[in-house]
Image 1 (cartoon, rainbow, N blue to C red):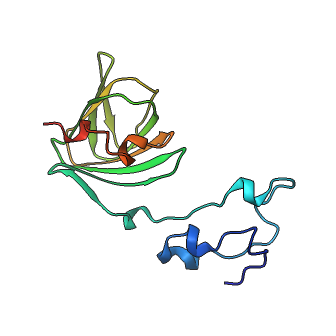
Image 2 (image 1 turned 90 degrees about the horizontal axis):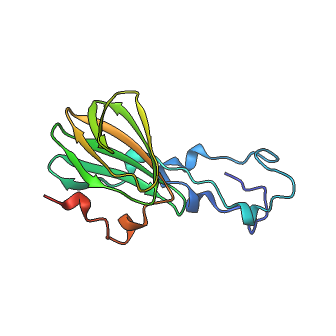
Length: 160
């Protein structure tokens, strides 16, 4: 791959792209650029393959893979039947998308039944808990990113 831009204005793809995906990135001079938006101020897009991220086992019934930046966290939950995310709340807005399986979500005195294809938006600080009634893949997007996962203060997942 040849970089046609000044090295100081565009990051090396090797630093912003997962190593196995570098071959999927190529220069496109003049594309995806807005006049008067500095490349330095705009940052650099990043490319990852979610399934290449490490799997973190929370317990026997729940594991996750995630990517996190300052303003967003993207999570793939792998839940077995009977898995639980205990009652919690957080400052993050949460978008939950069930792509496979079935979950019950309890929030504010209501039970929501989520099936494959369903999306739920949970506003910041709204209490909620998940019970996975069958093996489920749940994609969650949090904004801003989950600082409490990075600093280890999110202990609710390890509750018995």
